[in-house]
Length: 487
Image (cartoon, rainbow, N blue to C red; front, side, top):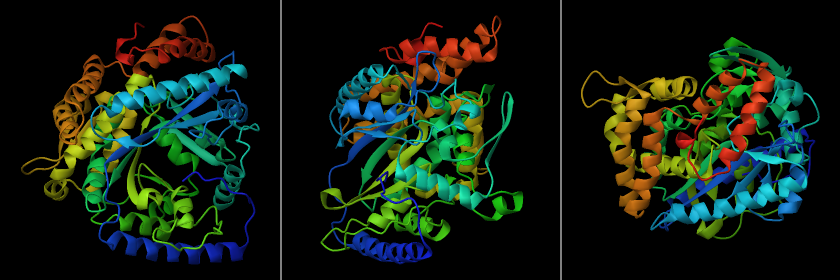
């Protein structure tokens, strides 16, 4: 999905040829999905963890190329801005104690990245937004040294025709603008992958769409951007506006955004690929030299295009292992700690799998617009948000406080993990972290706000943010989940 490209400039003929290949890719994918046995295999999971790099003064450190070279590990990669970095786990079976295996791999990778960053005078921040980042910094040369990101930035900026505007109303208000794609690099996510057979994909995908509100409320970790205290999960609003090529209200009413929850529940996974091709112009019209031959064609053009449409829950086609589909959950923020991310991943997977058998009955009782509203309500207000949820009888949906809703859903998520082969003790222990975090109310966002509010009694906001981040970093690299931090 994040494949590097070699070119940055494209002609009309490039776009025309790429469009033809996308059509061919879709036709091939339709046939593959209809083939008996396609995509069958063990249920596997994996994660991507995005992070920020900061210098000794806790300001963005644009050294990701140096860190990547020092890591020298194919599981590490660059992200959009030069102070962004990403690690990727290997796929592993959702059976036994998969999260213990994942914990060992993340511990290994994070130790490698922290050591490599230290060689360049940098430290690693696991948070949805970097608290000390400002749009003034983003106006400088901070885009990663990558043809892919330069080409994407140019294409999005040309489509918009003016700087990307940010307007967020939260605890405080922010109005600012940025001239290129560097604004997207303000965000860091935990992305959870789940391999699914095509027949199971629609129900689990629909469940993931329903689950976004409770997941966000329980995991918020992005309260600050550009010196302002905004939403519990500011990243949700910021990411959408960072790539929004629509410039007026009428256009926004009639044209979809490239960052979106989607446009409805589905009955066929093919629709998600077809929709992204139909709705969005390609940003990187790079035609692969590989021909669509063999039993499992790579579908390079389709995969490249999918990587430039940022659905909060995204369908992924992968030609590996005979070809398969994955559901990529993208709504949860990075951090605060490794154990918090493991718990968030377990809740993400358990809730999606647990809700899936209910979706056929619940979809008529839950118009899709309520899922979209839940996304933004949970992002803004966290555990205090009022979220809509399907009811067994009319009227449906009904409103629930996010805190209460999350607690009521934990047994379902735990049972689903165990049903899919996860060791019962491991499932219980991880979801207990979610339960205790929600009961205490001490999310990553709450901790950040609490510390900043304390420090800015005696110092300006920018100094308070830096001091808070100085406290956050050693706690974030430790073994205690965020609800057990003493702040």
